[in-house]
Length: 277
Image (cartoon, rainbow, N blue to C red; front, side, top):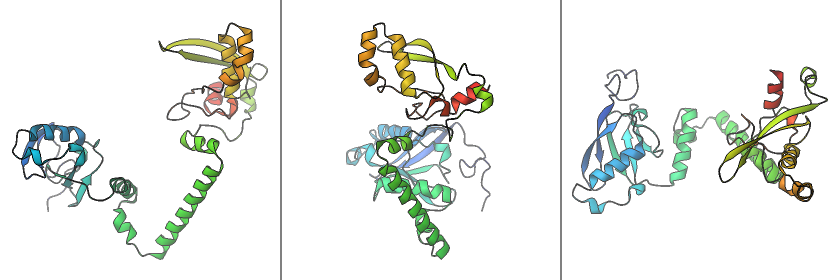
């Protein structure tokens, strides 16, 4: 058997060329050859395939393109169904540039999940389930118990714990600042700059505030509202309810940038790190 190519993109080629001819087998029996880009995702190849298939006989026998998935033979001599259509052609590790179009059988979501689980454990989930080693079975039962306890604890905490699970904030274990950082503050107060996005133009207004380091983000928002609002009476009436409408957006807090408004400012890692510079 010939050795694998160093690039791992296609059997027999050291490096897949920028464009490659891919043979696609349709469910109506037609074989369509497409010239595809090396980095083309499967979703683009499928659109290109069904556009080209209109020129062939028996096109009326095909269903909507969303009803089908691609399947191919990989360099490990395994038949693999490609559910993730964002994958590029060069990442499929095909034995030959041949793709077959089929209707997926069984639960689509379950198969996607099984594939994602199989990747980190380096074996298909069906093979993993066939293992009869008592140690493996005990480990799986213990992991299942840990996951169940974590889920019950999260659900028992109500909306707050569920929000922390979805948007985990980047915080220290305690709100106390180290002494060398606290000494840099002006009477324990932070100087915070806030940019407020104003709709509908999405323009930004800048406010610089001096606030106690152990204030909650909600209090910081309230101070920003006070500074922005010209009428004192309006602030007195609306400040309590309005401050809960927004979140502080700190760099490197969560994927969305939103900060959960339940921790003091000094407990967010970004703020002590900035003061330490």
